[in-house]
Image 1 (spheres, helix red, strand yellow):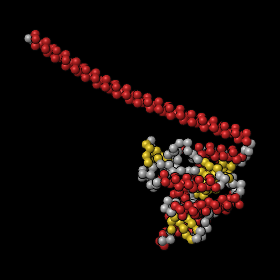
Image 2: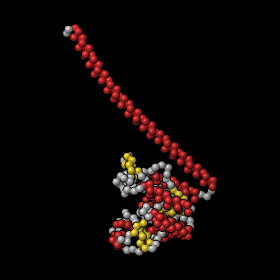
Image 3: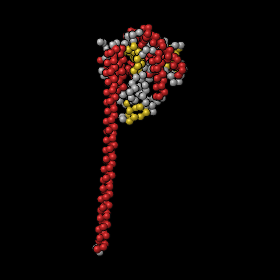
Image 4: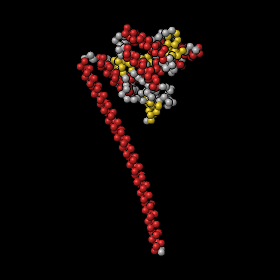
Length: 342
């Protein structure tokens, strides 16, 4: 069997799962043949923007690719040409960026990391033509346009790629940074743009749920524990830059979906589900054992501290006793001398 072809419409939260830095063996199973990165669904499903090289300016190759594919909406044509078996989607750009309205039914993603560097954006700003719409500031308007865009996407997929299976990755913003062993609030640590993580995640819930309620999709949700970001992440700490175990768990969840879709035998599926359940049970037990061990180690450390303190107190008391005993002895000797007339 050939490797399974996947396409990503989303962000690094999804694309990084198909990167050997995070899942070293993913290429044994999957081939990521196409990515649309950090593009709002409203932008993707709107009319393409005609642009020139001068509009893009002196961006590096990666940023240029991001901006040009957002402008051209070429991802849709590429999907038809490449025919992925799975399209894995996350809505990072709709949560973090929003869009700029240009003309009727024409939008571009308001990507502050990439678009804002371009001469095109600078001209828009000078003209005052950069009308921003975000899910936080324009919630009702944004949701209306976004839901219309979702409906357009699934109509397109149903007509042109009916065999393509859509997976919603319920990625979420994390709130904690593991700063070399110290857990700190990510939003206020000064390392990233301050965000209301709870509010953004509530909006993300609403987007995901709309698709889940209206279309036949599979779901990947990594919620077995509270995940953090960390300093050693290859791209640095950020709201969707997770610890390594997140990516491993993502791949396992994807395996489950693939098994269920590619093996039609009900009994075989039941066996596989039992295997996965057994794996989860073992994982949970191992995590509990690890926690128990850590607790025991913590108790042992605390006990050792108490013992050390007790030893210190004992030595202090002993020294005090010795001193008091010597003083008492000297006083007694002094009294003896006085009585004897010495």
